[in-house]
Length: 466
Image (cartoon, rainbow, N blue to C red):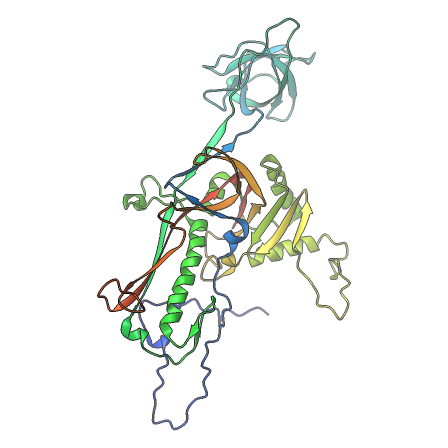
C-alpha cells in the first residue's frame, strides 16, 4: 500500500491579478426555491501559510548607511602548506633537502630558523627539520636539515612536483645568534555584500472598496471583515513579509556577463549562495549514519569548532535523523524503547528527537520553508534538505564603526539614516481609502525594503543538498 498521487495538494496560485469568478460567490439561481446553508467564514484549510520565521529565530536586524557592506574575518593563526616539492637531487637518506612551496605565489610565511614537520602525501613517511638557509621569496625555495639520523625519509621528486605537506611547529637557534630576521603580518579576509530593493503593491478601485462581500474573510495576521479587498491587501502584506526573508535566503550576485547585470540588476549574496561559496556542502542526500555525521563533525573541527549548532531541516531529513538516533538504542531494532520515557499504555509514543550530542551539541528543528510545496518543498532539482547554523555570535571588524563588534553569524543590514528608514516602508496613494494624493479613483498600497544578509563565518555553516 502507498499514498496515492491523486488527489494531491493544490498548487494553483491563490493570488490573481484580477477579480475572477473563483474569488466570489456567483450562485444567483432564483429558479431554485431552496437556499443553501452556507458557512459565512472562510475555512483556513492550509493553516498558517506564511513561511517566514527563520531569520527572526537566528539573526538580527541593524541599520546600514551605505549600499556596500564590508567586514573582515580572521585568517588562520598557524601556517601549513599542502603542495610542497622536494628537490629531485635529494635521494633517500640525505641529511638536507631543498623545498619549494607551490601553494602560494607570494608572501610565503616560512622563515629561517623555523622547525617544520614534513609529511609526504603518499602517506609512507614523514620528517622533522629546521630551515637552515635564507628564504628565496622569488621561487619560494629554502633548505632544511633533518633531525633524524636516517635523513630524508622519502626520495625527492623535484621542487616542481608537489609531493609533501609541511607544518610549522616552532623554531630553534644556536647560542649567541641574532633573533628571528623577519616578522609576519596578521591576515584578514575582507567580504562584502550589497543590499537589494524589494517592492510590492496592492491596488483596489474606490467602487470595489464600497462593495460588501458574502464571505467573512480572514488572514494569518488577524484581519477580518466582509470587504474582500481587506483580504487581498493583508495577503499582499504577508506575502511581502515572506519575501523579505526568502529573498535574503535565495539571493545570488549577478555574474559579470549575465543578463541581469546588463539590465542594471546586481543581485546580492543570500544564505544558500554564501554557504555554497565559502561554507561546507553535504551533497548526495542526507547523512543517515553516525559515520556520515562524524565526517561533518571532523570538518567542523577544521573550521571554527562552534560548540552549539542548530540544524534546520525538511521533513525527510528530520525523519532520517530520528531513525539514525533510534538505531543507536540496543533495543531499537524490534521495539520502541528509545528515549527517556516509560512508553506505558496511557502515554502517546514519542518517536522524535529534538537534538543530540556527538562532539558538539546539535539541535534539530523543522524549517517550514523547505516543506512548503509552493516554495522549496518538492522541487524537481536543486533542492535543499537542511542547513546547519552555528549558535551565538562572532567578533568581526566593522568598517563602518571602525572597531571590532560582536555580530550574530546571520544578520540583516537595512538602509537607514536620520531622514530615511528603508527597513519596512509602506504608504498609500490615490483618492480612495483615506488617501488624497492624486485623482486616481483607487487606493494603492506600496511596500518597499532595501536590505542585505551578512553571513559571518560561513565556513562554520553546512548546507545539505540532494
